[in-house]
Length: 520
Image (cartoon, rainbow, N blue to C red):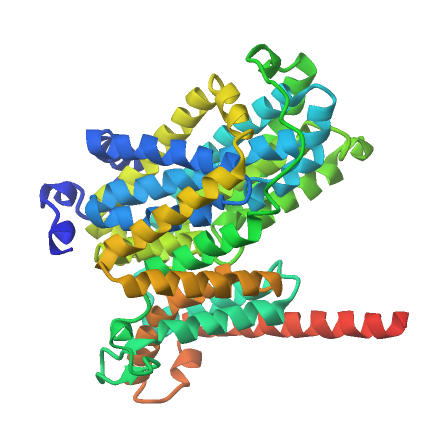
């Protein structure tokens, strides 16, 4: 690990104080990083694996990134983050394929694509729907990249004035927002966040040396292994939950390159939804606690609202494919804004990205653009390169992705289980971690059956230690007076926003209960 954390000085010395240089200089530096042979190889590997995972329903980007986390121990931090990022937005591309052809969303974000993509396939226009999803995904990603470049420097400069109290309050706001915004059951979501915070406390307290929640198990002295937790929740649990559900009847239709060509009317209808969806996705992706799933559904609702013929939606409207696909891909890119500049993951997948950085001893935050410009600008440029690779590869290789949908899932899942065991064992060489993955996977499946969201558990697990550290620092600075969170203007705003979200969630729950009693 020590060897992985030692980086050559010239990697980031040339752009010291990068937040003060122009975006053009940063992009030029990013090209020098992203075009390194090793980084480029891992970028291609990430986007291809992401598409593969997205095409296959029932696996998802969370499981794929969890499986790949052990690999990040053995490669450079830049290559690791670029590869995992490629898996993330590559899965957005692939998820649309199964959604359009089989009405089986490859990812949660692509679920809304089935509403009009599948009817288009039933009408013999599957190729046009796939073309619309891919070109919208590419252009939406470009919008997200522009937002990332524009906002990152500003946020990084603004965040340098943040103190420990501000960071603690902001992270709490992110957790509350994740458990209330867009959640059908805020109580269950909040319970998952709290459970994640508790699991994040397991291990030896770095300040006092006290063992917390270890129950005498020496293997837990260093805490719960992030890789084991992620693989159990999103690898084993997903396999258990989807091993029967993923088996389907019928086969996807054949799609040729000629069938991908849209009509003039189709091309005329695409620009508006792409721009609106990309802008909406960029906005919601950059807000901690929202994510690409919410933005894709909001984009669909927006397109239906602005359409002159809303009755076409649900019957094969190409706008219903283009808008959501642009939104979820734009959100996937802009979600890196709070993760890299503030150290706060915008969604659970970003929490895994944050974990990958922490593995390499890198702490994202306002100083990252100054301290690690190679990481930031290399990642930004790799987004553009990776999305271009996806567009170039996916259009001619669409026949291969369609053929993959014919692979029986009973052949895939045993192989995934083997990779899970090998991956988690390779991290620490401990059979205890393999047993932990099995237990966590079973628990994750039971949580999913009970309608709890395990992704929020991971978010609480990653942010918990960071909140605790900043909370202790704030209390030391305030000499034990909690009023420090209200006397500092920035943290006071975050506290007020947190209280407002909690109040709104409680009010909404009471109103639903009152309406339910009134209907009786």
